[in-house]
Image 1 (cartoon, rainbow, N blue to C red):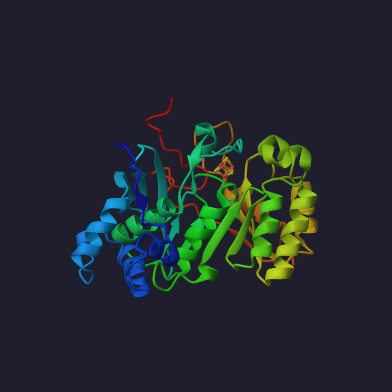
Image 2: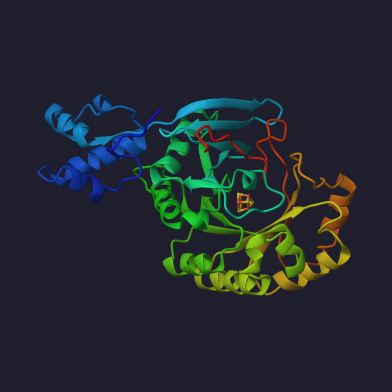
Length: 345
Ligand code: SF4
């Protein structure tokens, strides 16, 4: 499948659509924007209330890129669904629908592969291929919505890729997901996650968009974090915590810290003590995530180990949760996403 030179209407805002049809009244651009992002149309002839001539002219320069579902897996035990989507250039990404008490949480990808090389993550093995466009990110929502067994209530940018390394498109797609004429998902239900790109966290704070921020921490010393997450070399824990604290203060939003529990690696008494101390000044919550084994060298802790580690936060001034792993059977759980790249050279 080859991509064309036409402009993909998915991911474009009203002003950009207006520029494609300069001789039309502004309300036409709004109509197209809604058809594309709210109705999720796949072809121009579905836009019933637009003049044929306008659609014909528009179709000369623009198109609606619709990814193909390459694979659709369902874990019947938990109701988790994993969708592998193929884009026009043949690259694929995965997104995951996870049931929550009010509907579905959609975990979406922001890049084809990832450059950050976290040692416990399968996506890291793909290396980075390219950033997804805002339209490609938003398309994951549209396809998932069509296949979801319940309304999508929450979005987490925690799939393949580091969202902060594709900052502009991630923010643009989050804006579309939040827009009442598009995804209509509350901003408080949209979480952007990062492995800790400090400068981008600062940029995000300055932007003042008020989407939720999650930081994947996973170690309590720079020595260990450097080994697990190479990004720590240039973004040490101290500066990361400072950026998180500043974000919480400026945005008035609680920051979530994610901590993947790796047996025998980051679950000692000292780790718990240091975590308690380092997170204390920050308005935050801590999610403890049992590692999902993916044929890498790490081991998932036993339930006893998880409980023992969790109990060490009994007196923590911040909420601590052990995240239930959903979709392990279909390799849809955290850190397990990795799609083949058919046209990899
Ligand atoms: S955990 Fe996230 S940031 Fe790290 S390699 Fe995997 S996708 Fe990239």
